Structure formats: structure tokens, C-alpha cells
Image 1: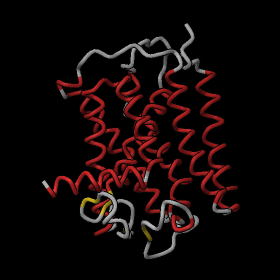
Image 2: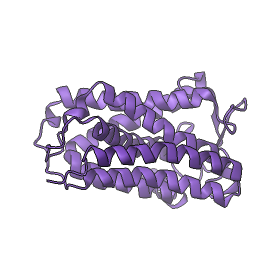
Image 3: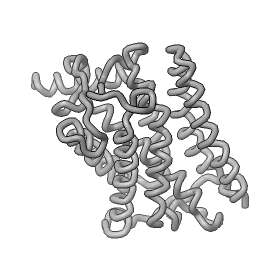
Length: 264
């Protein structure tokens, strides 16, 4: 019982010390449960977490797929870790991959007459490719400020043995993010195709559902940009603003032009 109590104490510590992570994770639970239903949502969540954790576990030992890096375990006695990887970090990939995947599917959908959530584009082979790119673009803004966690409430959580080319972040890290985004979304497509529990009827979606997805994706950008400004790294803030605008403006315009707001 003592071990169980300690587990929940550390789990609660993860929530207390990383509330922003769990706020976005709650967004995932709300959107994914409504869109996918409970069984498909749990399938996406569990499979994505396992893939992300294995990739982080691997990278910290042999460099694949993010390149070599090391987590600093100063919070091991305050929040939940699995081996040398903090639980919250792998959990972040769940909502980052989901919102990137849904936006990619929305952008690639060829018609706007699907009232339910079973979009044909969820199964397109190109969707995980675009979804991986969209998740990597998030990381272009996230990782440079996360690397400076000692300057804000994140704390120093990891370091690279060799400084990367983009504000300290390595090219291998960006390649790893694309790999994880692609792999988690492609694996979920396989579940949609073959898993019996993923064959349940899909729910109708609100006409503005896709804009809600866009808003949460934008929120991840804005949160990290806000932290960048807060720590007064104005050069990085300028670069991140450029990335955000280059990503969001064409995407928003395209969604509106394709009438993916679903006005009937």
C-alpha cells in the first residue's frame, strides 16, 4: 500500500509541476472522446504514449530517433518517471500528435459533406506525413524554449551533449519529432483499418469542430511564444513568431477557403 500511495503522490506531483501539459492533455481528452469515442481515444492515447516513450528511452541510450540527449532527474522525487524518462514528457506527444493528425486530415479532406467524424482523410497515406510535419513545426517553437527551462518554471530537464544548430536544438531532434508524429499516426490508421473495437459508429461533429482543433494547436504555439517573451529571448521570440505565422496563416486561410468550417 505504501508503494501505491507513493505512486499516486508522484503522479499528482506531475500534475502540480506541469499543469500546462495536463491542461492541453485535458483538451485532448475532450476533443478525442467526442470525435473518436472512448475506445478509439484510448487506442490512440495508449499506442502513442508507448511509441513516444520507447523512442525517448531509445534516444537517451543510442540516439535514435531524436539524437543523443539526457534527462536531468532533479525532480525524480517529486514527479513520476519511468526509468530515466519523465511521464509527462511522453504524454505530451499524445495531444501534440492528435491535434497535428486531425489538422492534417482536415487539410487533406476532399469534400466538406461529412457530418460525422469518420473522415476519409483520416486513412490517407499522406495524412501522417503532413501530420508529422505539423507536429515538427510545433517543436521548432517548443524545444528551443524548453532547452532554457532553467529560466522559467519548467526547470532544467534535459541537455544535448553537443549544441544544435537552431538555438541549441539539433537537427536530429527535429527529425525524431517527425518520425514520432508519422509513426504514431500511421499506427493509429492501422488500428482504424483492422482493430474490431475501432469499428464503432462515429459521432456527428459540430460544424466548427475543425476550428476548435485549430485553436488548440494555435494555443500550443502561443503558450511557448509567451514563455519565450517572458524569459526575454527576443531573438528566439522573433524567429518563433515567424514560424507561427508561416504555419498558421496559410493553414487558416486554406481551411476557410475549403469551407472546412462545414457551413451547410
